[in-house]
Length: 257
Length: 278
Ligand SMILES: Nc1ncnc2c1ncn2[C@@H]1O[C@H](COP(=O)(O)OP(=O)(O)OP(=O)(O)O)[C@@H](O)[C@H]1O
Ligand SMILES: [Mg+2]
Image (tube, rainbow over all chains, first blue to last red):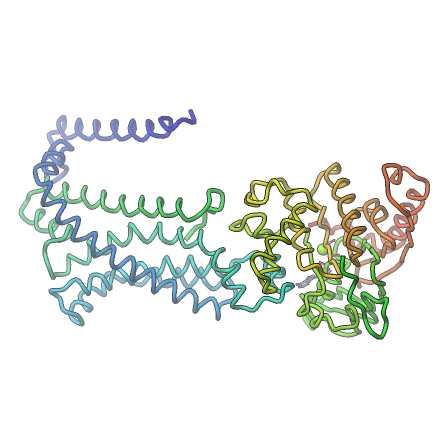
């Protein structure tokens, strides 16, 4: 039960049953591709267009990656600043809820006008803004939500606020940072992709999905969606790998956004 | 093993507290007088225990001494200095009920934390932490992480950390509270050994009457609402050994402490009965 295989088999089984059922449903009900293309059709589109898929995914992933880096840096800086002024954790949650209601993706057309629409810049910016929030909220929490006894200990040791930040708050915030990153990384892919719907260069996954659907090539559109899912998954797994590398096992506290 | 830093005016005084009062939430409906007119003198090298029901202000008293919280009136002198000066000069080490170790540091690096903050060189830090690990018998766990240790071992690390800069005064707030009886007794003996070896002044908070009697030269009994000192019982058990806990003298002391606690418990029984332990 506890072997590696024990973890691998259940999802494979579930996926097989799911895809099999899907294929069966499409064949038996004779569903048209614009309603729901069969997995076999998506798979053949995916493999025949592999180079195109790869290129589109690479373009969107690059936008997502740049936005993720940029947004993370901004999120960390704002969290460090906020930590100096917000001392009660209570403030972070409503702030997050408030920010979450801002339809950031709607900023894309505006940013497209502000920056060169033929460049990647507006998309990277939108992605960065979207990434900023989960990073900011989680890291701020990690910096503020410090064990009270550990804070007293730091005071008893005559530590300055700066030393306390370095020795206690920042290490304390690292699991929170990864919680934020795990939310932010797939979000970055979605943001980079959706931002492509608002015009600009056409080689990304979002543009390809839109044009395939417009050309009634539904199997191809779904194949691009599959490529987008895989890209998001790779981002997520990369964060998990990074977390494993950086944090020792048991310190991987589960925190919520 | 350095002799305690002495108060020049009053060479034997490790702690001089008089007329100390502390009120939380002044003016609010939930105002609490945590400490009221507390007088306490502790001489250098003495081991005293603070005992009393939950909420009687033991932790608050310890925090005032450690300058972790402000007080409203009275005077507090730690080795002849204000609590703030004493804290800034690192004259005390503190151990809390929770070990409060940093998970992201190894055992050694947890113990070295006070040394780092005091600006010790790396080689000196390593030498000192090795010495302390040896003292608390955890040399084999130097490079483990705190979570890999049992509760008792973690508490020993916290105690080693509180001893790191060799402060003349040790403040301990129920450090053995979460331990089972066997571990607890072993830890008590270890603490007495450390005390013998280092000659430190120790202020120890506990809920356990036998623990207070076994460890201390003097047991200070407190009572709640308002928090104050109601009795002080001299113990004088001499050198402790396996027989100490079964001696008549030990039982007599336990009985006196219990009676001192009971006197105020009955007078407050209605108001304190609903207060559970935290
Ligand atoms: N930060 C605080 N704000 C408000 N009231 C406080 C605060 N800290 C302590 N008190 C109050 O002061 C009183 C004394 O608290 P204290 O923690 O010193 O008790 P204690 O003797 O250590 O109790 P215990 O044995 O349960 O640890 C209690 O009534 C408590 O509610
Ligand atoms: Mg307490």
